[in-house]
Amino acid sequence: MSTTPPDGPDAPPPAQAALGSVDDRPRPPDPVTIVVADGRADRRAVMVRWLQVDGRFSVVGEAEDAGTAVEVLAATVPDVAFIDIDLPSGSFQPDGSATATPVADGVGALAIAHRLRPAVRLVAVAVDDDDRAYAALAAGAMGLYLWDDPVATAVDVAAGVARGEAPLTVGWAGRIIDEVRWLAREPGLVPAPELTPTELEVLRRVAAGATPAAIAELHGVTVHLVGLHAGVAVTKVRRHHDDLHQLDVLRPG
Image 1: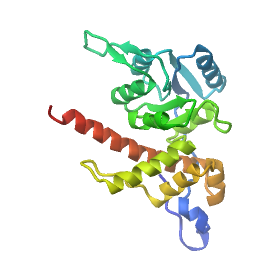
Image 2: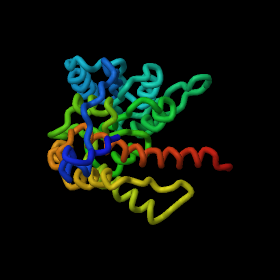
Image 3: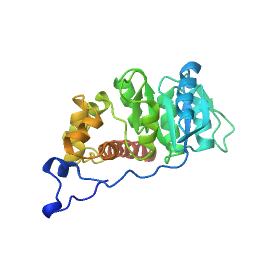
Image 4: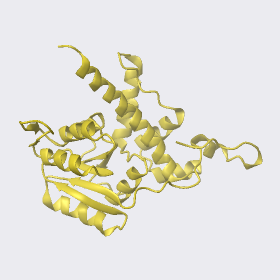
């Protein structure tokens, strides 16, 4: 996640030491393969165009409803998938099954896709940064992309997610902090996620409205490193939800 800051005369300033340092960003797959699932053809076309114009990406599949999104993602196994949480309902045919499985919406598609292809990095797409958008994290999303975000673009998000970063919004960051705090006070069968002081620092600053670039400048580190800390925090919370789901599956009755 980060390297240990050196000691002695070459030690970074205290602010940089708080987040650590990295020499360079890792090289993502070339090209990064992507699936885009959105119920609105105009928005889907815009996102596909943004990604295809950039030579780093190859859109290998599109979907207009929740069932098709699962089928396309399972068949193509992309590096990254953008899935609109408001996808219209649909159905897909699981391997070896004679009956179709209904999928209610994009959040449902995220949950099934995460279970079928856990290596795919899922990005939820939403209009509002609300509780329903946050439900995408429990379903398996690595981050949230807002259509009206004046800072992030789909290209930036895709590149970051392919390198292990998590695109955080103000709402997601604040809700992660609240959820982890609540879970620590109300222990259950699955231990609460334990976030490091650095991960909490990133979350708190994003929740307060700071951009990854501003956080990186404050601590004298790369934007990539800030995104990695966010990614680890999201992964810890997502794994907690994965463990809860597995517990429900194994519970008798």
